Length: 594
Image (cartoon, rainbow, N blue to C red; front, side, top):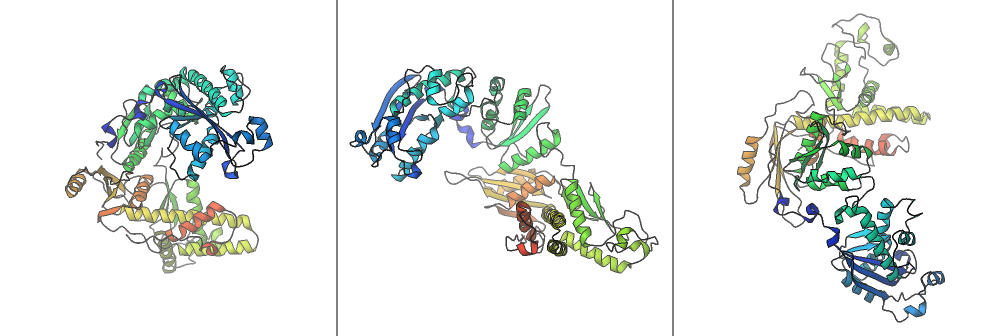
């Protein structure tokens, strides 16, 4: 699989890569006075005050009263000192807001409890039919909660913070004075954060007290990474892989581990141990996802919780012997037997096995029988749950017919199990034995999921080669064509057709350079089940075009996919024990032949 690709992000270094120093940012610190707490409840703006600053210097101020065209509540008038008479001749919001937006254009908005002030501004801007300028916003209240301790101040109100940072202005619920006090609070917070290594706007916006100073000092580990999709590996001093991740933008994602609000304590521990970060550039997002899975399986990093042990799978096997039986196994052999799976847990496999045994009375013992066994029957035979070939109670022809029906259920049509367990659940529900009905519901859900998974993976894995393309999403229009070559369920090659290149020639060369992949036995693809499922999701996504399919890629029309959506919905809700037969109006999934 080719890992060399010319990234669209390599044309120039972005602001996000460089970081915008705080000393070079122009901030507009704004404060509003209003008639109430929410514009959606009919509350109006009565005053706008703002201060424009850069590098610690005041560049200008903006202040205006606003006529709300409604009575100001008495308690608001007492709180702010703004009366109805004061705003009678003031401009309405239709005039005041455009003037403020012109004053603030090109700056970063700052407010104490920014969702309140910016929410009012956005609301009236929308009512006036304008597009919101898309200001970046800094909330000093949010920052203070991450920096200020109880030893500094009892709370993070503006009045309390103004005292902490010795503001020259005392907040008094008038817009301009409160904005001036917020300027002093902003500068005080920036001074404190500077000592913690926060020097850019990006770092200020994503600062978290949970990211230690030691972690921030490791920001240089991201410097060599490109703005490209791919996989990143955190490694320790001994080059052991600690963590593997994937991103559409390697540098931005890795930098976030040192500057962003990373709340997972184990990630902080991992970053503390890391000494290097390696990046692998990938042509497409799918290639990055697949490489991540393979690297996790190879290195088994201690800080990755998922996908570390793809080899730990379980299967249900329908054996090939004179008197076949169902067996729980961990490997698929090239023995012409039929398999259902893989299951990621033994518990799920056991539930599915129980559902099959509830429906088909094949033997459950592991003894080896000859063609004409002569033994004593077991308890299951006495209970009528086994055809009892051990004592000659059933002939080979009758037993083989049951096995053929079981085989058809595993590979093509699960209706026999679905209908039998539905009938059992109906009976249990009518007898108010709801806990037992719930056990059968879970068994049925496990079977339907496993059967659908097996059928989809089998359909993909038996195709020697599938070549497909999809146009990449591009907000500016156009977009490049990404190409994937899939062989027996394994991603064998990935690439992006270069602009102006001959598409047919590129596809031919990509196929020639693709990984050689051999077939695998049973339903197991030539890759891990998780990898093949990611490939399947991409192949089934909108916009994918099949260039060539070698073999037959098709799922049974009457397969388990028809029942999957219903059982997933029931397992999700678990609100009642209404039989699945009565829930078929919820959803139906049909797996058409490809």
